[in-house]
Length: 287
Image (tube, rainbow, N blue to C red; front, side, top):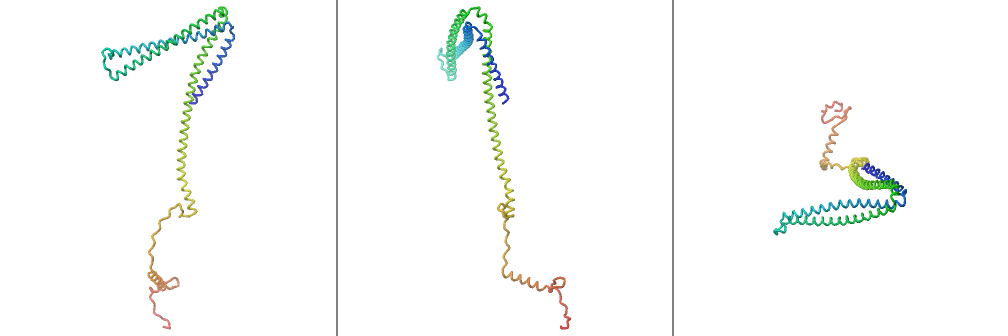
């Protein structure tokens, strides 16, 4: 995470400052030496570096020689188990592959051992030359002068050791910081992709919801403008029409209504059906 990246970068800056401080200290010690002592110091430093390289090459050569010896023993064991060459036994594919791999391993180990042997011999030759240069510089400087500047010489050697440790630490921290930054940037990129995907889903969902919710307001507006029979509302199905009345039936109906109207008279407080009321005898003097 970001905290781990920041911590590595802060530690890297601290080691860089230490490396810079050691360089300054070494430069002051080196400048304080006599001109007659500096060649001896340079030759001694070179001899020490070549000696360390020779020791490393010796270990690598010994390991390669041991591996070559093991490979030869394995090949010899396989040959004895398969009775290869002695009785002319026919080998199947698996046995041939096993024998081929063992033979290739022996050849590879032999080549690696020979290469390391040449490199080791070269380093030994350089080491002898460096030793001769140191002896000549010591003789030129004199033992008394070398004893006088021995503290400076030891201080410079200590600075070189600290510088080597600081360089190794800087390399490790730089690689760790680079890996942490790459992992952090990858995580941020993945989070951005997830964020974009989430926003896209939300936007699409909101659009679908809005498309459904916008129908109701449109219905209200259409109802206010057009009434119940708005374009957005389906019209109700038409009612079944009543049968048409023929002119004869209509005429009879009107006549009936007229007769019924004639048979009703005003009786003071309402119409009275005359046809249903019996008529009394006429007592008028004119009867």
